[in-house]
Image (cartoon, rainbow, N blue to C red; front, side, top):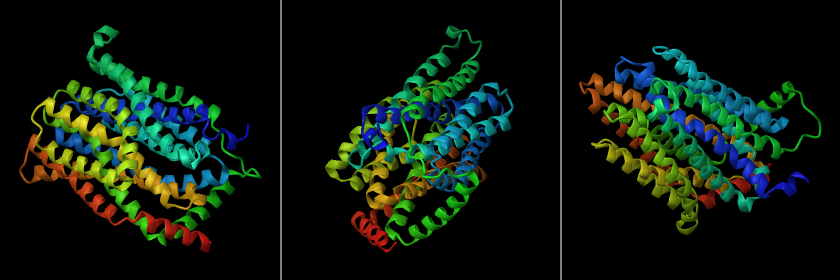
Length: 439
């Protein structure tokens, strides 16, 4: 069976989408769920909450910077040397290993916790660059939207299932033989590493990428990758509409990612119980499972940009409403609201970009798309952490400082929506076609 005939096959599609099922365990259990609680209540026990929030925000930002620096070059090298699966395996192993090693962190070892967590984030984010780049080898153009949405949906479901088991274990540690909830959290980190590795196997078994006519050494692939990266950068500079979309995407997806990473930490700063916050996050996962696919149908009905605007309007309401949270019930309601739009905004953004770029150059352009997506983790957490520190300097203390800091994310959604408003999809397509003809 050739690679071409494997496109759109059920086995190939599910094998690809199962990687989302696998690595979403890190996004839910570690990044959005337990690590903020573990870092604040166990690792940073006795440390001022504002200081621990800032440390967590800066850790996310440093990991994002590392991915931004490496991803474009590695993506170009992967294209030139047919190394997508090999580089995916490298980042996958790094992320899973670093995550599992969080189980050995002791109380007060916040530097070690930050280093291991940042390594996990780099493995997760860097691996997604190569995972996304395999999509053209899995689905034809007519099925790309469906397969992309399926990946997001299975990610919500798979991540939610493991998270549910881990939440049960953490809320009832004695039932599992643990002396304290912190011991259960450590084991949860270990389960994420194993889950991530185990459910990634189908991708490596059933997904194939074409080999170049001649095998290339790593040095040659790197040299050609640098040249390709320089060429692609020059091309994108002349495609004003695509550049404008990337700017818009960077702004609003930064807000999306920041809410994912900082929500539990924010709820704890307001004095909510960590168990209630984690359960709310779990609820988001299961709401997001059907909503991601449903949002894709909404995009077809009212238009992709219009559906994205709707999602951003909901996010704006969430950031403003988040400053007025009073009870755990309020947090649950916001979690459900986020679950309804989170996957949809991500999936439709990828679809809109895919329709504008030249089909024959999609792999290279998606390298920049992923770079922008990974760069989005840099500014938002710093904005929240920095706003919290600034509010404290101005005399606002405790929960009030945290409430003021969360509203800062609204700036990202507003600016991103304004930039997206001026993105003309048809103009972008024409610019891309005209440029491709000049090559």
